Length: 581
Image (cartoon, rainbow, N blue to C red):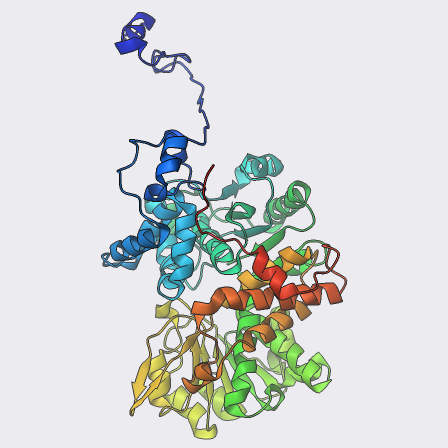
């Protein structure tokens, strides 16, 4: 192979750029060193997403930071940049195109991304998170461009602490971690589940005000049982069946130990989209030794409870007088049921065991009853009540006569016309929550719920639906979105320096959210507040959670602030551009 000589390099105009490190003169067989020079000015400043402002750099900043000539002459303020962005985003035909455009923006100009998301949250939330993030995860191998988090695999066993140290940020406050086994209602997506932690943490920053640099997305890759992915030449994860048992547990334990060793006692670890058999075990194993939270179990429970608490004003009856029926007895369903039972027990000054008797669950084999107890998984056993076996949902409705129907099984259109009509036949205002997402997995649509109940249903869903007109009335359904809860909960844990997550904090978060529902919301049939005021909502949730942390003696940040709401608001990350010296 012909080799370029040093004399060739030095003969360029004005000496050119001398090949100091021998990279250009090296042959293909030679190793080179990946040197880089980091200077927060000039061209490198435009390549730094944390500080880049694009065309918003002022004339003075362009001179001071050697940007003159690297940008077109026009200066656009952040507001005009947002307007241009929205114009561009709306040109795209498909949600995934919009998702990719927003990802590119986040990688290019961090502050503009978060400002854009905050100011247009109702329009952009379905793009940044559910339902679009599900499609993004399915196609993650094809659209992957640059790392937005840490990938930890079985190859890293024994070296996880070193892997964590490879992440450039040292002051991490929130980690969202998944193993990709149960991504939304889409099943095992393996390593491609990374889209979930990335999306969740974008919301922690935009909606809850946690600094982006303090957030760390993590995917634990232990393989996948998805044959389609294993045979996909573009799959980015380990090409092997999922590790289980001791091998899996040891890897997770090493990760949890390394997190605490590297980031301290106060880092929040949020488990996300783990399969049922691991989700409950991990939460039970680490909740007493780490600051951990499972959004699928606890976050979903808190946001659903908030909707039920606020709906009391529409049903004119306390929760203790209701009978609840769930379709789905997985981590979401049992998590919601447990928090409802805890709330009722405090409301009625009764035991949790007694409160559980008002709550019934249907799984794939029918109503969960005592006669099935020996064959049930442990987390289902508390919900086995004395009753004759019932094989299907419609039969259970007729047998139990519930006032509240909650779907969390991921079975699309399971709430049929017969099911909605059966609920409406015994209830003046049937409360129906179709929580599964994405939209294709929703138990029913808003239009079906309102039409089949003749406009009497109180409806909320896990996926967004447009307003519905029925017999001259317009019904606005609200999305029972976990994004109402987890950003504010996370902020509350951070500002209080909490060391553990207690169930009373989840109740406090739910009560704070329910308290933000206005008369105007109720008049439209909504049981959640408008998402446009989410930063204010998150501040109130954070204050309630922090207050509870101080009351329980779990807060490490002392002294306690006099005005915790004000403390929460002032602690929130602001993506407005800063002027540079």
